[in-house]
Image (tube, one colour):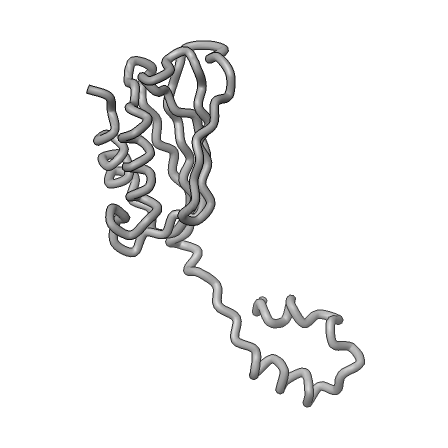
Length: 138
């Protein structure tokens, strides 16, 4: 089944077939290659704590051009981060495009953990993990 068959199904019922074809021919739709779109989860053990300053810098470098792996597009990030700066407090990080924030989310209900989900295109888990490792508190 062609995508154009689904998108035009009963949508132009009052327009002649000739005009429908012209409209379809003049409409350019682009979709990302589905094989390159996906999500990855990056997780660190409970005994690993991150520096807030370093974590913000490294996450920023992933979202902005300087630290981004070649052809990698990060569209969305969400997760919990264990920070040395406030070890008893959960921090929820989220990003859309190149904008991100980290907010306090109360005390840890159980053992602290850092777990982030990245959604995007051409994501390289090893590269993203290694960049975040640079933010582990000394």
